[in-house]
Amino acid sequence: LSALKAFPGGLQYGGGVTAENAAYYIEAGASHVIVTSYVFEDGQFSLSRLERIKGIVGQEHLVLDLSCKKTRNGWTVATNRWQTLTSVEINPVTLRELEKNCDEFLVHSADLEGLRLGIDEQLIKVLGQSCSIPTTYAGGARSVEDLYKIHNFSNGQIDLTIGSALDIFGGSGVTLDECINWNKLQII
Image 1 (cartoon, rainbow, N blue to C red):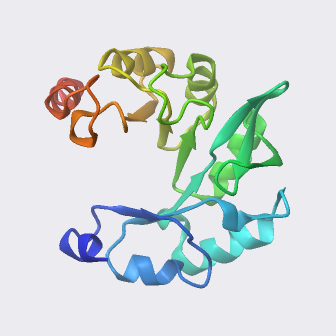
Image 2 (cartoon, helix red, strand yellow):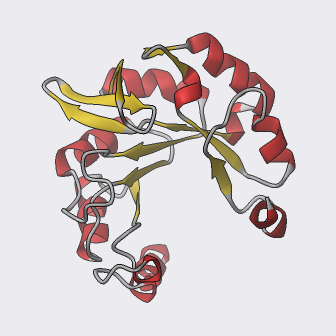
């Protein structure tokens, strides 16, 4: 809450967000709330829950976290700390339908998250071809080269978040300065 108040409109908030508490985080200064498990009931997507939270905070303040695992059919959204596979598959049809109800997507490749084994190139290509709203991919990034790869695989449509490989988080694969410099080059 201190960070949200210190940088109003500059941070997103995620973790345990529901229709009951989402407005609180927006009022505290979050630009968006990130929602995952709340929009699923017993592994099934709940359009009524999505519409409820969207009605409370507005589509312009809503990020859907579509953390997923690789399955035989492609990628399936996983909830409850990535332990419960839902019935929702990550594909062009699903993404087009869901983006009507949110401002952004956050897509974790749960199979790679925190492992520094490289990014899921195929998933990134699907996201790049299918998403028309801002989308951030997370999972497996291990070097500044992954910034270039994701940019190329998605035709510049998908952003990348780097976690455990980043030097400020104890990693040795990527420095914060490298990321800042790469981003500055993209603005030019």
